[in-house]
Length: 393
Ligand SMILES: Nc1ncnc2c1ncn2[C@@H]1O[C@H](COP(=O)(O)OP(=O)(O)OP(=O)(O)O)[C@@H](O)[C@H]1O
Ligand SMILES: [Mg+2]
Image 1 (cartoon, protein in one colour):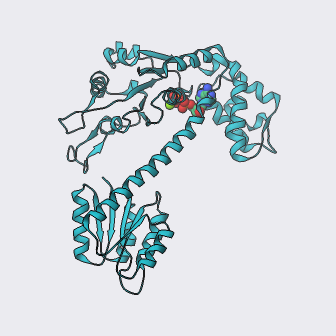
Image 2: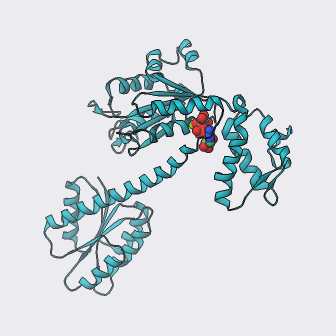
Image 3: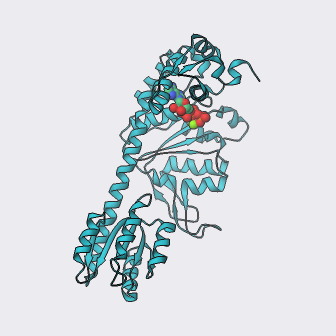
């Protein structure tokens, strides 16, 4: 289903094409007035625009529509419709980024085919953008830094379990790199070209989280104005990463168990399940065993999730990695983007190695970012570190 904006001054034409598109399941916004259409373009961000080239004899409005449609983010794909004697302008339109043109009078099938091609072209383009984005992120994994024996164990574990389909529970304090590990698992598996979808279970109220994860049917509750696919479906073929799994409500825990056992998801308001092939990775900074004792976490779900668990050590348990991480962040996250290079005084490195880092690697990264912004002439001094590191309130 695509969002299509349609512009033509011939009312019957608009009616025919609108009906055609709606029959194919698309969401159509028909316009016969140029100014209104230009406004609609901006407000609706359609994926496909079908526009008549001349809305009156004197002015090639279609070219203006095209221009604007191409500047949207993401740019809309444009098909122009040309009347008799306007082929040259249509060629102009193609040069300016129109996907295709159709000449009036046309057969319905001809237009249908053209639309189908434009939409699959669209899909290929967005897939491409998506893959490129993911690849960029993948780059980070080769960049899980750590020489300590504890981190070496983590690397071995990632290698061993990445290619399997088992559920993995990633444990560790906040900021220890749980999400980084989850991404490494996904991108070193044969699911790597399908989506990796992270979601933080503690960030949304129960009912919202439920419809995010499982989707809903139109009308399932107030505000459900459209059918919505859930993240499990979006992640089909790939991996879903459930962060802060310990804060999931008992109802949702039961539904998740069902996904894990039966591979089936049911949208809110739907009786018919659909089947998904998703690998589930979960993370927690809390001891789930305690939650089980308190009756807040289902034991059966715990066993399902905890088939394999990876424990990430806190930074203070592996201080030998601190200099390595510091160099890594300075080189890859601070030098590269700013084009400047930074150095630390010896004293700064001492302070960094002695700090307890309750926020772990994330806290270290943030401290360095702050210091490199504040420092003079690329030399980071103790005074540039956050107050807690200088024993100040
Ligand atoms: N071993 C590591 N090497 C390089 N960077 C790391 C490492 N561990 C963590 N980081 C960086 O630290 C930041 C926090 O990592 P991440 O988000 O994976 O932690 P988390 O355990 O999921 O944290 P939270 O519990 O707060 O969600 C990220 O910017 C990540 O790139
Ligand atoms: Mg995280």
